[in-house]
Every structure is written in structure tokens, then in C-alpha cells.
Image (tube, rainbow, N blue to C red; front, side, top):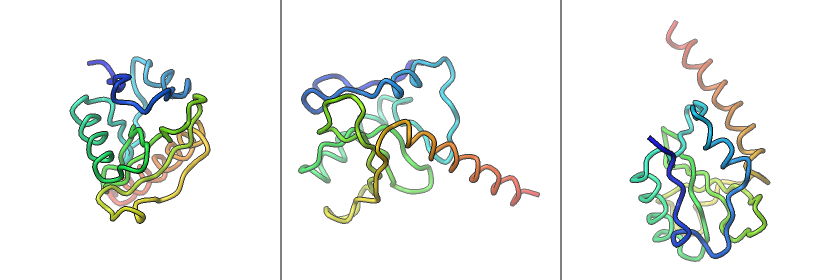
Length: 131
């Protein structure tokens, strides 16, 4: 099973994935960041979220790449950034336009650090609740 990266025709004009993201996606084993999941592990999921976010927020150029398992919060690259190190927006899908924004990080590397911390905390809390 390979990782699905959007076709150039699906992406905003001149969008470039951050190198940190493509490097991570090229690993033989993608890190487990539960409660986050990389939607690119399944082409159907990636395509669904790309189409859905374009439909819901047509004025925004978003490139979705991860989702929180327990909600409709999606991590998306800023598709307007053409320099190759875009901001990561947290978008709450299915919220009314103008209410979807849940903040951002300045880069994928920053998002990844936060997601790793969230994952460790989430797994620790889950383990404590199972005891």
C-alpha cells in the first residue's frame, strides 16, 4: 500500500508540499499519531476530504492531510502558499463558512511536534483509563 499524494490537477496552482511532509510520507512505516490519522493513507479518504472542503469552503485553498479520529477537525496545508513550507490550518469540517477555522501552526514541522505531544498525551490518558 502506497501513500496517496494529490495529483497536480487536484492541488491549487503552484502548491508545493513541504519537504518534511514528503519525507515523512516516504518512510516505510508512517508514525502512529493517534488520535490524528494521515488521510493520505487511503486515496478514497484523501479524495473525499479534498472534494468536501472545496465544496464547503470554496473561497479557501486547502490541502487536507490529516484528521482527528473523534471529530471532523482536519489539518490542511495553506494551498495559497507556493514557497513549499505552508501554514497548517485546523479546519472543523461541516461548520458554517466563517466558523470552520480552529487556528493554525506556522509549518508542518510545528504541526508534527504538536501532534506528537497530543498523541502521547492521548495514549497515556487512554492507558490510565484502561487500568
